Length: 68
Image (cartoon, rainbow, N blue to C red; front, top):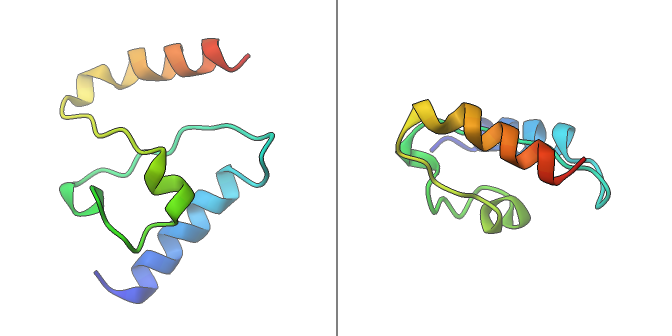
């Protein structure tokens, strides 16, 4: 994957999560992001691949309820 694309992805991730007290959901759609060593390490460690886009609503609700 092109370095400019990866840099933009990592910058976008960093805009959602700015420090250790922040939380948010970032969706990277596509298999090219699974186990991609160019994605920021802390983000990669917290990635949870999801095969079914229909589960996104439930994932969001559960995540934000747990982090209120």
